[in-house]
Image 1 (cartoon, rainbow, N blue to C red):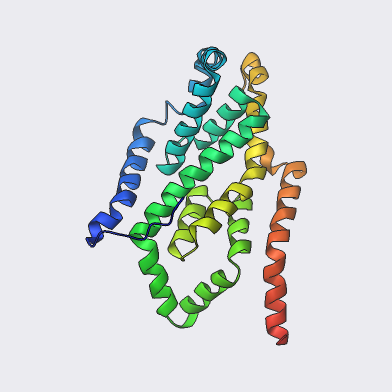
Image 2: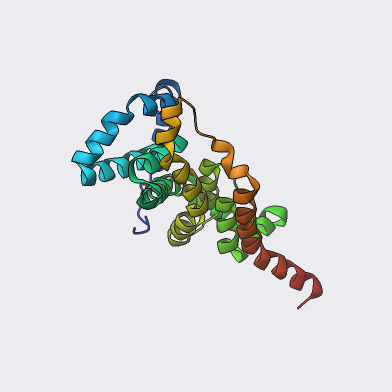
Length: 243
């Protein structure tokens, strides 16, 4: 996806994509919450399966597009969408479809934020001094590590992880690669939960979304976080020793 280099001179036009995202996000939170829910998925599961069986390729494309829209406009239901990917397409290729849709949607937010705010803010941080300057330099010196960390740490909201890189001048390529690879562990976990929804529906229950915090799941993810943070720690220690 090419970098966006030509921008309108009018500041309002530059901010328009981000403003549209914010407006749609607010409207979606108000009007779509009941439609993008577990209950809605349970009520329409048979129709969805029948449509998938008759139109697999179309269902795949429609699902990925829907996921992109949900993420790009920060609509409620991203978790339900991930579960739906597993329910309709199994853990694989469902996880691949989920990661693809989430990454493309995240890129939309990233570009909108950087187009409207990011370049200007990054330039101010670059020309700044003191703490602000140190923060910018710290991010620049550890971009890959920081990008993977904010994707792997479950406590970092997905929307925040999309905005922060845009506001500090991260390149689109690095953002896209780190997003795609960094969200795979969590996506596989929730997609696998979605793949077992048939049995959950049969029992009239709701899925246990807290599974990601189970030791067997959380500890490997934290291990990946530690690996991503290790180069940052090593650089900091070398800096203190003057190496």
